[in-house]
Structures are given as C-alpha cells and as structure tokens.
Length: 115
Image (tube, rainbow, N blue to C red; front, side):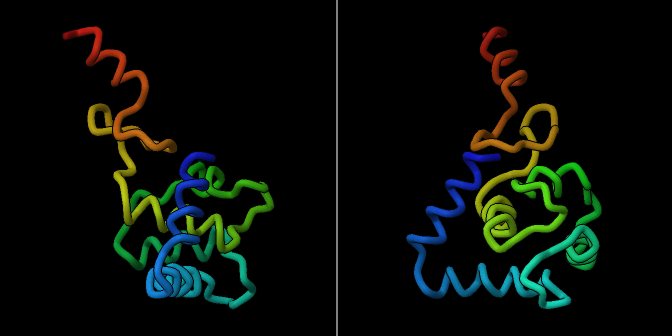
C-alpha cells in the first residue's frame, strides 16, 4: 500500500489544478460531516451509493495508514488513485491488490513456472 500512496501523492502533486480539484471534490463528497476526515460509515455509505457492493473493512484499514479509524485527504487520495488508474483485483485469481502490480505474486510466479 505504501507504493500506492507514494504514486497517488506524486500524481496529485504534479497534476494540473483541475485534477487536484477533482481529487479534492471526491474527498469532500465522502466527508459528509465536513470534519476533514472520512470514517468507516462515510466510506461505506459513499461506496454503497456509488453502486459498489464489495465494501471491505480490511481495505479501509489498509488505506488508514496511521490506524486512527479515519481517512485523511491523502489516505482518500490513495483510494481515488486506485479506482482511477488501476484494477483492484488480481487479473488471475481475483484477490484484492494493494501494490503497483496487476496480478498477485503467487499468480505471477505460477504463470511463469508453467511456461
């Protein structure tokens, strides 16, 4: 997840003002009580309202780098970058990916050992 955080931060910091505003608007849409933090209830409600049924507390916890039970802007930015730039799931076995890869290590190793 740290690689994803670094990538999200780099994209945001080097993005156009329009891209930065889109990311900020995304955060504000999740932060329904306007306390500059997104808790589990806000996160899951946002995903559910967006039509996502895969809501997972463990994924929320992975995003929450300081483990305070809430997501700050940079933690939500990581999520925003994930959904805008990559797949959540291993293209072979379907598990949730938390790195910069498109398959999990196990599937990658298995595909390479079978060739």
